[in-house]
Image (cartoon, rainbow, N blue to C red; front, side, top):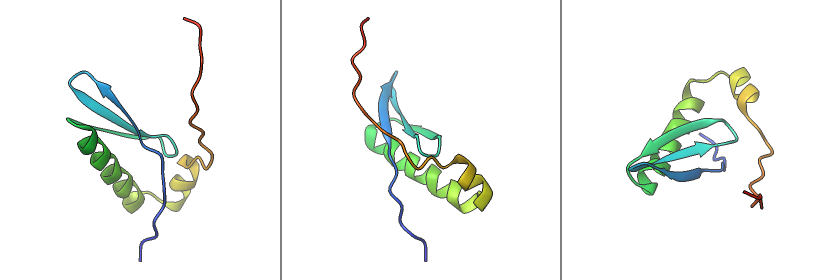
Length: 74
């Protein structure tokens, strides 16, 4: 049985579509809508886990990812 894991999905508009990034694994995808980008990212992550070796998973996995707002002078 596959175990469930929670990851972060960062989705942003890019041109006419959306890009989606999972920073814990450095995996990205895209879609024409937020929902499509999200679903495509989930599929990309699932495919990664199906095909990657345990060593590659451990090498790419970042257990601590922090999302925080930043104030920057521009």
